[in-house]
Length: 400
Image 1 (cartoon, rainbow, N blue to C red):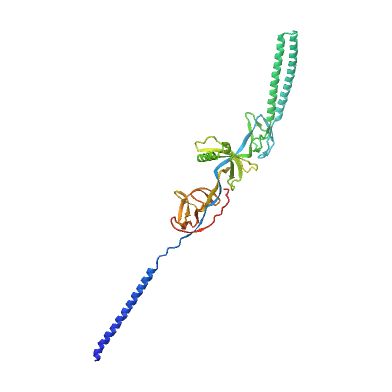
Image 2 (cartoon, rainbow, N blue to C red):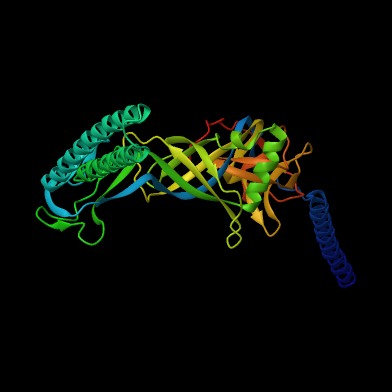
């Protein structure tokens, strides 16, 4: 009997082991199903749209300028020369001094020419006496002829003598004037207000011996010219704008002009145009133009290189954007604009001059466009962004 129960127990224990293994397999299967179920529920979530700062264009009046570079030039520049021969007696100014018109600058041996003037005046007095005597003799002979006391030949002789005396008087008067002019040349005076250069001759030196000797140079500094050139395209644009506004050539010559030196900020010197050439220079394709400026403080000297701008017209509602918002590629300049669906668009624009930190946009933008100003590297055309509206300060026009 014991021997017969033993195999049965063994079979019973073997069945429990199998059941345990089955239970483990079932638990593993349930766990694997749970893991698979959890993986199926973890779906992909896209990252949020990048944040960028946007601003609408600033709208304010804008003056359109014609800009150029040029040089200053003296309105008067004269070499002072000795027009009579003689020894230089005195120099009556300090080198580099500003002198008024009529100021005596040099004296050239005046005594000799004063004596020549007195000699000519004496000759003129003698000629006047001869005329009076000849005139009296002519009247006397005329009366005698009427009474037939003398012949007609005697009257003709008296007439000839009178006429010669009058001619000699005219010659003497001319000689006196010439002597007076030469005497005046001994005193070299300033022909206008200006600055006189250093003297080129010394006291005691013989001047004017064979040809006029240069003594110094005088330069007028107030007012002063500014010469510059305008290219052909700008000339055509200016003429078209003038026709549109009904301006005449005289009106164009009265346009204001603003000038600044290399070391100056802005254009502090104001003047007006006064000349434009009648033809373009074919070799350069430019039109020579000149302006004139007051220069009472002598801040501008002839020969300075200057920056020039001429206001042409004014746009009442010009659009400005920060210059940092502009990009460029082979097609030109552009800005990134956020549309109504917050999608980035690349917008081609035509730009104008820079005023401060703002750039004028001539074409390509509307007043309500939202331009990306910060976060340009995170903005990709065709993709969404998270725009944060900011206000651009409407800075005053900067004088460049």
